[in-house]
Length: 306
Image 1 (cartoon, rainbow, N blue to C red):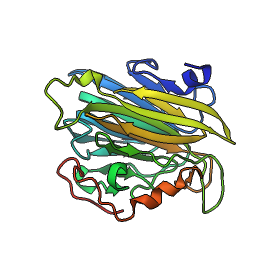
Image 2 (cartoon, rainbow, N blue to C red):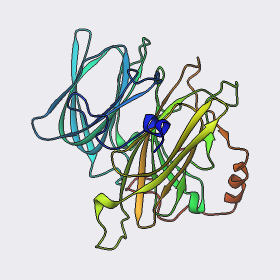
Image 3 (cartoon, helix red, strand yellow):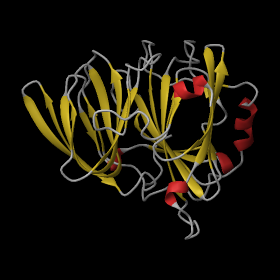
Image 4 (cartoon, one colour):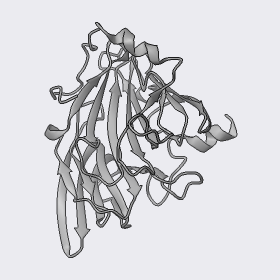
């Protein structure tokens, strides 16, 4: 793996710090606007989110959690009921104001998306039932998106967060696209984090081994900078995309693929605007007339707003 790959792609546990399995924040060279923390909690474990001037979204990946959060003289406790796994539909999430501190407890696996900011937006609990669910693409490019942290769904200062489920053999983050230039009305500048999980598909053979589940992910250079990721991704792996074209993310036959996307950038407007790689943009037109994959949606939710 080249030096630049090692800078932007990290295996599970390679970024462990302070009781967290993985930590990405602005202390990483070349990284400014986004962050993520991932942990596996057992009964009795406690994790502190003690910094202010950072907004956060707490996302249960598997299991349920309690967040005791304090802002000024007010302390509240929010229960996040969670889910069995990331492949079981949306989850309760909690957006924490940049003026809040918190203590996290529970059992299971949890991610915290972060972005440094001095702007203050109100803390908000978003139950699973209120998460907008989008079925995006068609045919073998069908995927399911949970848009709990997008501008249309959440009043945040900088963070844009969603999660994507790609059924076995399907492609997502496709066509490859970028968001590393400020072109008003066309493209916005956003760092992006991909946190991955993979699991045997629901109809997989009983011989399938969960730890062996994988997908593929690629990112490559644009005029804004050089990047080269071509990786087999498994649960807990993290890709950082500071610039460049990224995609596809491909679910291997027999295995479903999940990723949590965390985005933020320096532009004044909080908006997700992308430019497809011109060599592959034509692929979108091939979706016309195709049905969405019948395996979607995952979980018991109904399709929400697009």
